[in-house]
Image 1 (cartoon, rainbow, N blue to C red):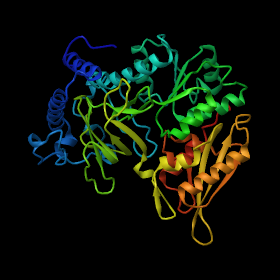
Image 2 (cartoon, rainbow, N blue to C red):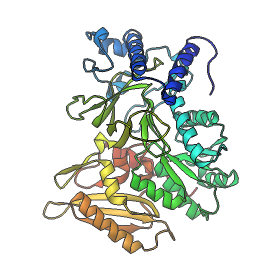
Image 3 (cartoon, rainbow, N blue to C red):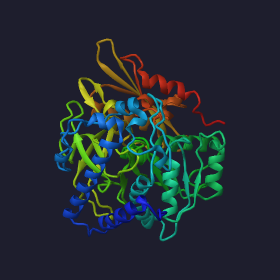
Image 4 (spheres, rainbow, N blue to C red):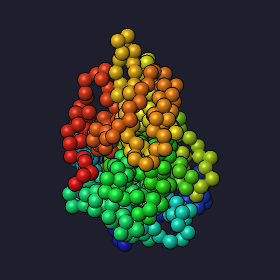
Length: 473
């Protein structure tokens, strides 16, 4: 792992990595972890309240000395709207202290700046490195696999972060974003084959589109490429979708990490395909999405994080907008930290037949038991009696679904039972390109056609973006 050799960042790295190693060695006591988090919280609060124009106003009047890791409720929330409004005023160190500048995609509002300094890079990447090293020990018998990194943009942290992690574990990595005008899908597939890449990192949507492209260009993913692991991130990936991807690729699928441009890597996967929180880097709260009432560090609700690394842009009580369940770990893997399960964005919940469903529940209802699928889309409408009904559009790859009619009937039966509304299934030769836009806009905009209401802003953005998302180039 690259480390700074002098200055404040070097001092931080030495202290941080001592705690990090003890955390992973299981030699860090609860008391020592609590003390570390209390010191880090105090440092961050002192920094943001004096260095950030936004937080100087936002935290005015709060008795910061009374705030503890066990009770953050006197602090106001930081929201995505705050970040879009305040922009560089959220920073609490000079922009020149950053070593990388990133932005959010800006598809649903102004792109917000997300610079990172050496402290933030070291702390965030350390947890991903532990995750990858553990998984590679399980699958590759001591050799460092060759890795393909796919996207998503030049101002996204994906390539730098995972490229650094690949270097940390001794792996060669190739950046082969298939939507790049320089690469494209034919070149990406050719490089996967010629370089004998063993691990592909991408979104679930890109993995599905790659499978369609492989079929189109005459590649057999099981015969012509060496991929053993799919590391997916950037979109929701339920166990049902992961199982389908495994059937399509003949590879093991890991929902490898959870995070965001704004908050970095919040949780990482273990060898058992469960997600563990990076608890040396964050204070975690689960809050009621409607009321904002905090349930503390565990429970079900909206994930809220307070960052413990005093980098360029630490966030305090940042509401991620993601619906999660956090539990104490009972995992027998090498990774410490509470378990987190992401069930979708709070904004992606849908009412069907007077019941409210998360994105994860809908995807699970549609894809449970499905193999060989290249994608799906759900159309919601009301019948003449005013009752909700669904049509699932399902695209199956040629030769992978042994009995398409039986697959469709199974989806109809299971989804009807799980969602409590009538469900029909249409087998499609090619879905609307909007389904490939999930990581850029939202799962809901990509996967749901809700004819009960007019298209919202996210859906209109996704529709515009879909025009340039083909793989035949």
